[in-house]
Image (cartoon, rainbow, N blue to C red; front, side, top):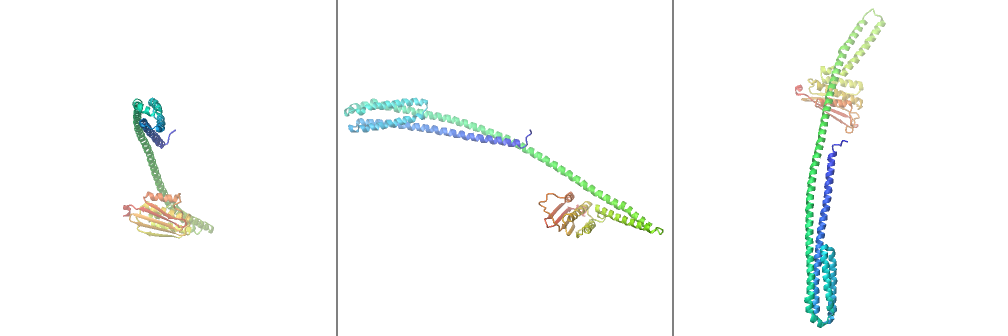
Length: 446
């Protein structure tokens, strides 16, 4: 199945829009994922770092509490110190438990060691709260140096180790995200280049499609112009052949048949003057003469209707005046004529065109417009011949009328053939005015 010419550009545009839309959607999702991973990595690092720093701080605070307890000689303060140490232990346990989701497998092993060291440290502190004042004075310094300080150092060392591992994880996450970002940028660059390439292909395909459509339209327009030109030439030839045929028939009717009938009338007249002819014979001859005279009149009217000889013999004005008298006599409608300018030297084409146009306009005013009066004005100016036919008939809607009669089309064809113009001014109930303008060749005007 052959696709229409617009299908390829439209399909290309759809594919391009789909690629751009899909690529944009994927880019947005990927950029959002990278952003979320970066935020998660920083949050994990900051959360673990905060817990480790607080754990280290709590170890130092615990050491200070133990030192203060060993130096305090008041037995009644023992419970207070014990509660402070218990609160610190609970806080450290919560911090150690909060570190678990922030660390990976390798860091979890270090966290287990840290938990074990913290528990050992706090278990080692349990007996001192049962010491007497003398025992605290005697064993306190040694306990601080050999138990508290090394345990605290171990816990802080393990916390520092976890901090370093946390920083290493952050660096690894940053490197991974940077690699992902670089890969994303490469993909984005490739997608952009592919989109641009496809856009160029679509543009070329669309351009070729539009150029092809324009070429076909131009070819169709030329074919229409050629057909119109051929129709105009045919119309011109038909009009010319019609006028030539009318002229020939008119002359034949007038010269041949008319002369024959005239001769018959003369011959019948001579028979009528013979004295020996009986009265009945005379009556028949008179009737024959009357019928012959009527036939001669009909033939003369036909000849004048086809093409009045006066149009070729004495000019446009007498022919139009005769046409106006014929319309007035046959339709009982007054036709007034107004002429100005010199019309004796008009070329035959211009003369015939105006006569036929006025003749058709008068016929339309009588048959279709139901006019009560008609006015014809012909003005011959240097280089231009203008004719106006105006009636007071019913008119018509010139804007809504999409179809014209053969008569008006014939007028337009005749006038257009001579590079003239036709204007119709009318309206429902407003009568009709037909305005014709025909240029006169310069040599003919002179």
